[in-house]
Length: 469
Ligand SMILES: [Ca+2]
Ligand SMILES: [Ca+2]
Ligand SMILES: [Ca+2]
Ligand SMILES: [Ca+2]
Image (tube, rainbow, N blue to C red; front, side, top):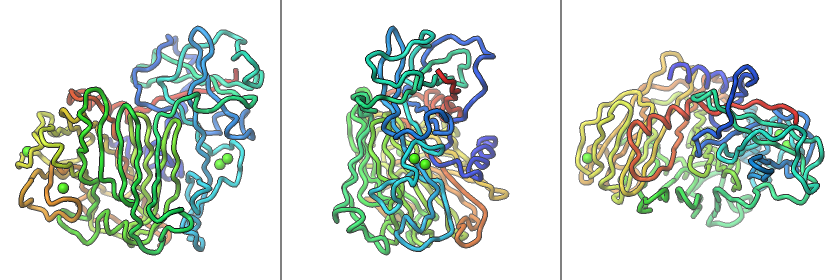
């Protein structure tokens, strides 16, 4: 955890932490005698940037396509997400704040389109490791004049937890006939703002701005949002999961029962969307505005079987912060685990003995499906520490329920119990704090060692190297 703090902190300082903890371009693989095998990490993305493929910079983003080679060439899904350094005042359709962030761009929000409309260095290229294949024969290229000859690069993908194996994908400039999704749509996002068109109707000065927005990965999960910060439904579809809505609320408070600030008050104050983007490889939802932290940002990246939720705190000094899931009555019967409480307790609305501490992962499991949740907090605040929260009480919960229903079912997550120094660069503050919650959506039967393994994978992202082909 300590080294992750440092690494993530360094990336954040360098402004590279746009999409969670970026996969690192690893050592050149030629030093290792590798066998070809696709890493058994179906949930994991591989995210390159334009800087990794300089020979393909300057092309239209839609011209980039991906292939794998097994016994022949097959096109695989790829997505380009353009980014640019954006003054966060722009996101509000307002005057510059001086706070400039490398951000996803979106012509349908005030963030606007990337000023460089081509594939440039800071744009991201996302694909899934499960779509990778073997090493293609020397000089071979996809047939049928679908790609520009000799435009390709070979991407070698390695699992740092299993470094003797490698798999491959090939990126090309296409000649124009191919769709980047290769017929797939792993996740779809319907941003449904009830007031109408975002730019025409969104109330950036004061909410609420009710939504009926849904993110769906047909074989693994769906989430529902009722407003900017209000995630109030989660269904797991993996395996034999019973598809119940197990989430009352994804909650944020300064302290238990302190209702002065919550995901409801954040949504009712000023705010704006950075980006809303749907598939084929991933969906992205990012927004600004949490009361007196108008530049505080939350970014959700939804993959087929995984979501990465990153919160960039940009606010004056505050007394603490809780980030927790409060499950719904339909979660009754699930068991809750974390790395400090591996035996598990039952979510049934009756109190449990769950020790608090700096948890790294959590897991819930039952007939409803399973979630493996990893937590990482990157900060340069000296002496930083955090703990955890748990409450299971269907009637008269000890802590006032500020939002959602009246019960606390397995309410659980991280709790920064100490004061947090100012993180708002618009106030001249230089400290940063970025917290990331990574969720894997799993079939019933996930074990504590299984959740621990998922956490290890999240903390050891797939690595890749790129050669011209
Ligand atoms: Ca760009
Ligand atoms: Ca671009
Ligand atoms: Ca219980
Ligand atoms: Ca509740």
